[in-house]
Structures are given as C-alpha cells and as structure tokens.
Image (cartoon, rainbow, N blue to C red; front, side, top):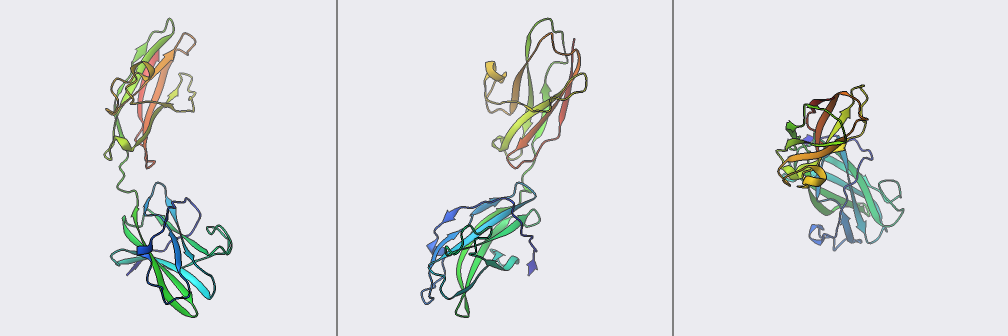
Amino acid sequence: MKNLILIFTAVLFFVSCDEIPNDVIDVEEADYQIVKIESPSLIVLTQEETELVTSLQLSTSENIEKVTAQILSIDGRYTLSSGKELKDDGTAPDENYNDLIYTTSFVLTEEIPTDNYIIEFFVTSLGEQKKAAVKNFRYDNGTSNIPPVLSDVFAPDSLTVADTTAFAVSVKVHDENGLNDIKSVYFFVTRPDGVSSGAPTFLFDDGSLTGNGDETPGDGRYSRIIVINQSNQKGIYKLEFQAEDKGNKKSEILTHNFLVK
C-alpha cells in the first residue's frame, strides 16, 4: 500500500458542514453518539498546497480517550495519512476548548492524485477503538487545469495625437477548460521612458461597445478603450497582455508595441 507523507501547516480552509447520518457507523452499543461530521465534499487545489479541515462532534467526552482519522483512496489502493489525532483543546484548527467537537487538518498537494477519497474516524473509549464514522470527498489536484492562451492582438501600430484620442485594443483568449474558467484579462503599459504603469488595466468581454469597445459578449475577445492626449509622452509604448484563470494559472505574456507621434 502506497503511503503519502503529508506536512501539516495552516494554509487555506475548505470547510462545509454536513449532518451525515448515513456516514455514521453503528455505535448503538457505544457510550457516545456521533452528533455531526464537518468536512468538505470537494477540494480543488489552486495553489501549491491546501488544507483539509475536518471535525467530529460527539454527544459526550466522558470515557473518550482518543479520536483519530485516516484518509484512504476510496478503492483502498493507498493511504494518505493514518492515525491523525483530532483534538478538542482549542488549539488550531480546533476552535473551542471542550465543546465536544474534535478537529484536525490534512495538507493536500499536487503530488496527491486526483481521485475520490474517504476519511475514516475512530473513537477510543474505555480502551476499545471503534470506527465511528466515514466521509467521502473528491480531490482535484489542479493538474487538469490548462492555462489560457492569448492570440490576435488588435491595436494600432502608430497614432498621431493632435487632440484627445480614444481607441480600442483587444485580444483573443482561448481556454481548454472553457471561457467560464477565465478570471481576468489585462495588460500592463510601459511608457517610452521605460516606466511601467505598475497596475493592470483590465479588458472585458461584455459586449459594451461604448463602454469598453467590446462588440460581442462571451466570444472570447476581450477589449478596452484607451484615451490619450497631447500630454502623453511621444515614442513607443509597450502593452503586455496576460490572462488568468480561476485556478490562478496565467497565460504567456503577449506583447504589442505602438508608436505615439
């Protein structure tokens, strides 16, 4: 059985609360009852590692010696962690001391395969350990998320500015995971003197022709209207376009230079 060693640190919480009577093992003969299981049903990794926080609420702490949990792949082929103790001592990730909610956390990384997993909870009471509850969850390690791709910049190559001038720029965005996966599209401007704006200018695919210069909503072409006047520096401006998806993966930078005269 393959064992994956996890490092336990506080990173990011994905917690949903479910009362799951069908996931409670028969504990009728025990001197405690399972009140609630708190655990996510889906975790999608969007950074280097993420934390799964889970807890088991009991009806009493009397005679309870230890509460532990382990995570297995649902087919039983490998164990992510075993014997991890849940605490009710008010120390993070446990929130409140002695409130009968026993809590622990597991760190999940990209190295852990995308799969269905099961958390098994064990309670030791009066010297006897029993499997008290189980909870299934789906883990997506994010490797199936493909970063967006930019192409086909539409922007002038040169402009002669005698007065206030407005013009539209746009870029085509493609994402294998669908356009709904796009979080933002933007560009950075570097002036002729080499100074960057330092802040992104966001483009839109909302069909607002007068507001953003975008003709058709949802077609993957993101647009923005730029306004310049005689006070703008003359010379070559550099626009660096980039897109970011909801999994925080970024496209390659696409650069366009144009001359202001």
